[in-house]
Each structure stands twice: as structure tokens, then as C-alpha cells.
Image (cartoon, rainbow, N blue to C red):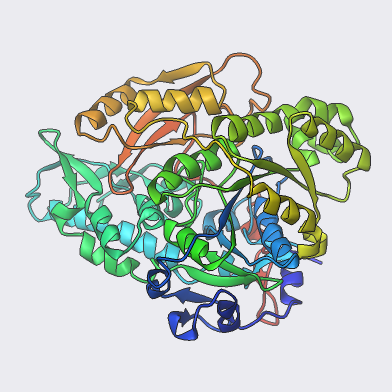
Length: 553
């Protein structure tokens, strides 16, 4: 059976009944049909004095084209904790339409561990990303309208981009204002995918409506002829943008197939943005559950680093335990085994590729000072010999391996890791950030590149050096850093999987996100507008004669 067939074959509970499991009253829900709802801001306000639950971060080895199932494991862990009698709740990101119609497909788990209704969540859901897109493009139109009617602020350079929530490489470089109208000035421009928009980051990092409006007003949109910054508040844009984002600011409540409550809110990518769901959703979940399972995007070098160095700093939280997701086939892939031979038993392949797992463990345990368990997402072709070999090798590093079979068995297949996590969250840790906010931007980038990526050093383009100097001169040198690089490798080269020998991280550009409150360093060939693959998932998505959606996986 496909994921969508499994989901449709499961009877969901009404969302008001799911809310009761975490003591949310019906009057504090804004229902979007029977099975999804937004949660009123009053809920968190009324729980301010309640003790937080334990926070479990799910991250992974560097992803491969084969898929590792990080969201699947996150859901399995939440269901597994409920299976052993613990009050768990999920706090995850919203899927973007770009990957759904691109190469990745849906992002609601798989098999018997899914969040539902999966078609709704993967497509328009409650309209949050649409609202973010509209707010982003409203600001863009206000900028061009201001210039059209005289340019009182003396715009000389515009840095704000339009966005769309689809993969469309044709929009990476565009020419706008070609209507020929008298006052319109044509200019070169670019689009981002919506989840890379600063508005997405702002929604995810804001704590309430007042904070949202302040951050929106602080967005740097361009420079005047004297090189001075121009902000969105000078265009009086923040109020209208906040109105568009009013409902999008409220976290969404859904459920797993085993009826575990799940808060889904916000969805920046980790390779081109900071990769975490919203602070509001996570902090609310910590008040509602005894165990909160959240995930960070892509591998731990990107998602976990940004989760800790950006989100945890701003939210005043930290993980009580970390789950590192791995698969036998991903380990073999990182060991250079060809995809055609991945399914064959190959201890040598695991031996060659296990260094990727070791490096992530070392970062999480020894750099961030956190307690880690490795979750092996089991596939049918994995042999007992391979699993035992991996288990022994990890034990030598003082890390436990838990075999997770959530896809086939649901929460029961995650009982072991649930029990291990309950014990792991009781242990003391030695939590650290990778850099200090007082460090220069260059030093922050260097510490991430050398400590987390394992690079020998960092190289900069002239443009990056100039932008860094400008940002520090403007007084934003104390912002955290968000490095945009490939997710497939510790390096900035997607093809350099084994990362042996000396390599450098090359920063080609630096951007300041004054509303979100961080600096983006663009490494390698990473782009903020992805393209579709040769055979996009969109080709298999359709509506059948019964009016049901098919092809989402």
C-alpha cells in the first residue's frame, strides 16, 4: 500500500478530541474542517507558569537521494512515547509546495507513522505559506510603487526580492518593469522560493504580534544614493504585512495516524534558511506535553547547528536529547557504494561510510555537549549482520543504536527508542553554542566551518568581504550566522561525500536579514530558488475519478 492509501485507511479523530489530549478547549480552536485547526494565542498565555516538558531534537546524517525518513522517525518517536504511556506531542515544519511537486515529494512521514490529513498538510494546509508569499510580495510592490511616485527615500539599490512557493529556475534572474509606461524604471531582479523569504524566518522567530510587527518594520529593503539603509517601516509597510500574517502566526494542530497531537507551523529550508519550525509552536508544545519531538532540516551540520545557534538562542531553550537518524543504505552511499548495489549486504561499504555518522555524533556530543542516540530507520533489505556491525561500531563510541520500525509497525515499532529517550533525557549534559554573538561575522563563519563542517578554513569572494564590512559598520555584527550550503556534504561541494583531505568553505556572498535578526552566508553553488528535476513529482500527481488526490508520496 502507498502512504496515501494507508492514511486514507485510518480513521482520524476529530480535532477537538485531539486537542483535549493536551488540554486545549474547543473554544480555543479555529477549526479548518474536522481534522485541522489553528490554536488561539490565549492558550500559551494561560500556560506561562507551567513547567516545560522535555525537548527531543531529531536530526540526521547528510541526506542522500535515497531518503532517510527523518520526519517518519520523528512521528514514530512521538507515537512510541505514547505507546509506553508518556504524554508526547510533535512540533514540526510545514511542507513547501516546491519539494512536493519537485524531487522530495511530501513531508508528512510514511507508512504507519504519518501526520494527517496528509494531502491537506502537503498542499495548501491552512494557507500559512500563501500568506507569507503575499506579505513578501506586498512589500516588493510597495517598494516599486514608492519609486514610481517620486522615490522620496531615494532608493538607489533594492535588495528585497519577490517569491513564489514553487521550484522555478526561470525566476532566478528576471527583468521587471518592461511595460514601457513613462515612470516605470526597468531593472534586473530575482525571485526566492517562499520558504527562503525573510518573512518565513520572521514568522518562525517572532514571539507575538508586537514582535512580528517590529521585525517586519526592521526589514532592510534597499540603500539610498549615500549607501544608507532603507527599512520597511520607512514605507509604512509593517501594518499591512502583519494583517496578512495574522492567521499565519497561529500554530496549526493536526494528528498522527495513532492520534498523537501534532503542532505544524512554519517551514524554512535548512540549506537556504534556518530550517526550524516556529518558536511559538515549539514553546507552546513544551507547555502542552511532557515530551516534545521536533526536527531540524536536512543533516545535523545544517539543521541542528542552526536549530541550536539561532533558534535555541532566541527562544531560550535547549534540547534534552538528540536523535540522529541514519539508514544502512545512506551509510553505504556515503562510503561510495553505487546506488545499484546499495541493497546488497556490504559490511565494507558500511565501514567506508560510517565516518559520516561518526562526525555528526562528534559534533552533537562533543561540540554542542548533548546526549545522542542513533535511530536506525530499518528497511526490509537491511540484514542482521549489517545492523549488528553498526551497533558494535557505535557502542565503541559510547552511543546506543535503536532499531526503529515505525514505518511498518507504527508506535510499537518505536518502543525501544522511546524507552531509551526517557532515560537519556534524565542525564546531565554540557550544552554549548559553537560561537559567541560577540565574535565577528568572519569568526562565526570560521568556527562553524572548522568545528562543524571539518573544513581547513574559509575563502571569501570580494563581494562577501565588502558586504561583511558593510554589515558590521551598520551595527549588525552581533547577529548569529545562517550558512546556506549544500545539504549533501559536510563541504560546500554536493559531490564530495567522503570529505577526505583538506577542503575549504567558499563564501561567495553575505546577506543581512535585519528583521529576522541573522546574517546569511551563501556558500558554494547554493541557490535560494531551486529548480525541478528532469522527472518532477508533479507528473505523477492527479485527481482520480472519485475526486481523490493521488500520487503524493
